[in-house]
Length: 558
Image (cartoon, rainbow, N blue to C red; front, side, top):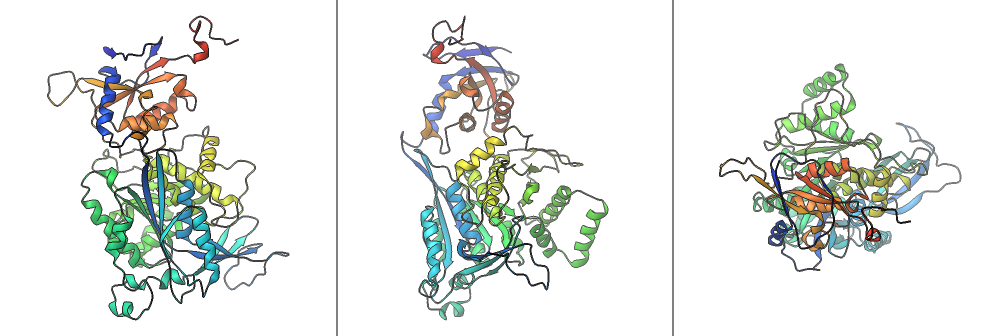
């Protein structure tokens, strides 16, 4: 392979060697950086903002500490010397909004704003509702669309907490989460009969205010009326149609299946990019689309074949997808991890068995499981944040797994929500564990990040007009001093690689050693390059400045 190097005006002693280079000729040149300027729509130093919209419930929770959870028909008393913990802010919507805010990255050049849409009770009737207002404000959640509904009580959650294991079981009283949305119904008579500020609701006007060009994600759940989820998801679908194939400008719709157990229409499911049930919710959802005989036959077949849980989940997800109404199915499995079964896409390689598996993050030995309340909400919020920041599916699942794991280490849904730093620290402690892309027994697995589809060079060196025989390269350090070109964090090398992957025509990048290998090893770098559909052009040996004299003959600083 012939290599053509066009050096920059900065000269330094460097030792070149090559990793992961595909066949073909390579041009590495800082000239390729000029491509970046065509992509730059912001002045240096201008902060980029994005937003996530969370729509859902707000509750005041009461926790009942028990030795064990009650069985059917059984009465239990609280643990000795304990009292209920009352009026703790919670509810799936509130939990997820606060989790999104605490998990979002924030820096000099980027900021994510979290909008929360919810219906709360009448403060004069239910003064503890202010607990929810206060905690949302403390966590910097935008409450412009959190409305107090006249003559309604705030929703309540009554949580039985098994103290020793942290397991929970809860009963929810909907309150304003159910009765505060009457203006969203199509029943005009019902609207006219109400006398509060949500009677005359213009959904389109609300959506025009909520969904802006920088909105990345809409996160829904099922402790509010289905009509609200449907109208918002439908509005987003209509907006996304106008974006054609520009994936980066489309709003991602995630539907948490948790909440009220009720049927979902095929149309509603088709409007969601991701549905996120746990195992039992997935079974109930599949059952709702089958008659009793068909469902029993499906379950019996799985049991007879003695398929492991993962394989059963994949089959159940494919049952939904076979109905033609479901896109990506992400199933959370608690301490058994999570599985995502993507919708089959013609753009993906011809495999019927594409799955993503993420094992549960391992907690530090000093951490204990205290309360599982809110762990699923943290997982869903973490997944939404990671997707909105441009992480691929596997990275998003890994980030979400860490957020969910940390949420079980404290009592209460909101108090247990971790910060971004806590999540990143846990991910670092799990770095040396086996790869999260585990193979599943008896399942052909391929893990693909299908969001990368940028034209590259490096075609055949014949005279075919469709191919360009050289690959353009760029030094990775070109990203270091241009953070305004990338809306995501630029404080680590992996993000630099991701940014370079968005440059049309760029095929390879050059690394510096040891500068670019302090936080990862060669195999991790190779994996990041594969995800970005790039290769390494060269690795340049760059000694730190303290070795400036005599660097090549005696690098020992002493």
